[in-house]
Image: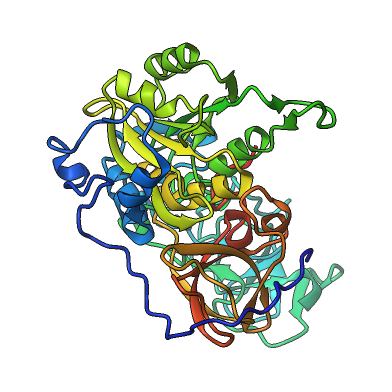
Length: 457
């Protein structure tokens, strides 16, 4: 795995306490959360100062909890045919419509026999899948049978081809090993009985889920729609191809965001590059029909950081204006209108944007899509990690035996560390000593396959 451990630093130390998601309704302005948003403040400051935003920054665990609660207003479920439902989440349980299998079947190619042997061989092509006879098989008789074929009534067992010897001259079948009644037979209802719950609400639809649903007789499933996300990339300094030049830099976020969001269960439009034009940004926001809008850059208070004034101008409700986390402090979360789409403003620096994804966008998208929010777990950190005096810090790490090891290249503008990481360690203010347990945020591709987390492509 690329990367190497960060250098040790002397810390004031202190135990690391758990970082539970707060259930208090806390917004950036200190008002109540999304369940009672009337009374929260709008975007008052067209260009708030960095000091002002730091003063009202939301604590990291509270920001994640707020984003999750906001996304729990799940989209109305709809019925989708099997060929369109992969990556969605079940809104209704899949219940067996019939016994599986719905009749006794052969588990092997061979001979179906009745009673003790040797058995007289019936002439003919035997029983094939899809055309099994329901006529009884008299004792002492044997009939060829294919895997999946329906067994005749009164059958005792199936003998595999390799465990049988047919004396064609005498017309008799002999078993080369002991025959146990019921062997190599799949009895009716072995997998499930009609009415059994096969898959609960909340299951992500994967290819095996499709197969099970089809086997159970379903042509369509009731699922939560995948949230539609628009991505607007801000910044006149960004190039879409070639080497950085003349003060211009490559856009690292545009190519990264769509597959990342798809891995969380979203349908993502092609990222749009809006530059640093306030009028263009305003029009893009008011004309979007997405469930969630992500913007990159423009969240600070610089001369071309237009996001705050544009949000103020369209009457958006600012729920989070800065989070006490490094990198990624100037992220924001807003709702464009009562009951309207949400907007997550990511900082322009790449690792800071990753922090914003994991803090606000990831729990919001998962909740809208009906998926469970990423499970929390803790691991021992391999080294001392320097922390911010007041804010949470997110550090790229890799798993190393039974601990995690911090990676170099973890500055706000760097992606080299997170590109080789398994997850990000949540380092509390003040840092942690070597041997301390910290919370780990898995990256979607490190914790699950693309099918279990939605399609990457």
